[in-house]
Image 1 (spheres, rainbow, N blue to C red):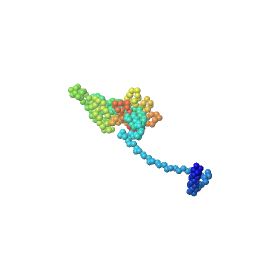
Image 2 (cartoon, helix red, strand yellow):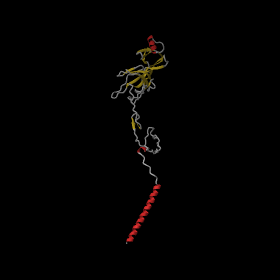
Image 3 (cartoon, rainbow, N blue to C red):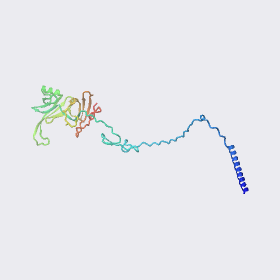
Image 4 (cartoon, rainbow, N blue to C red):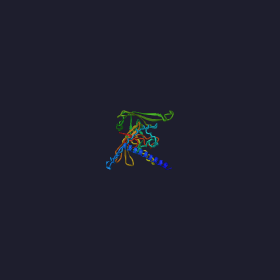
Length: 305
């Protein structure tokens, strides 16, 4: 029994010697091969920290093409996510894609042209007295008793010379009262041919009708005022003047019969004179403004200068 315990003890000591020898061999080898440790650096020897910036990759930018115009026009352009805005233009009476520009309506000139009427010739034949004709002098508001040729008395000769008119022919005729009915009763008329000694133009005067061909007249109307009735102004010839209730003075400078139009100058206190050419108002609506003014803001009138 004692010998068995000794064997175990000896075996244990042998194992310890083997294990200790192995550990000593490993420790010796590791010490030879391991690099020697350096002493720790002092705090003042540490260099400042400098971070490295990583490069950033910037992707290329994609640019979309500009949107094209639609079939409605060049202004009808919308982005992909932009809702369309439509406007109603009161001036053009249509829907548009951009905000309308407000245009201040033109101020009325003050008068409108209704029509141009031809003027009567300055000498009218109104009847006969014996072998002479009875003529009406519209220029001087006088009556002339005269015949054809130069066989007139001093008074008639002077009156005709003042009008610059010469009587070339004078006839007394009997014609049907109704020209369309030859069987109607006969009436006596007088017909005279006169010549304008200044222009050489000849005119046939008939005692039945008023002969036109003189200076034309213009029928004007004050600009329409809502709520008030329109009224025509007495006919005005070249040089005629009309003064409105506000004191503005309108002078007719020229009248053209065909196509009808007139040139008018407006003079108002404290304002520059304005000269316009007025066309007749449309017959269906005399209150509408259809002329164009020379100076930008006024009733429809065309430039006169």
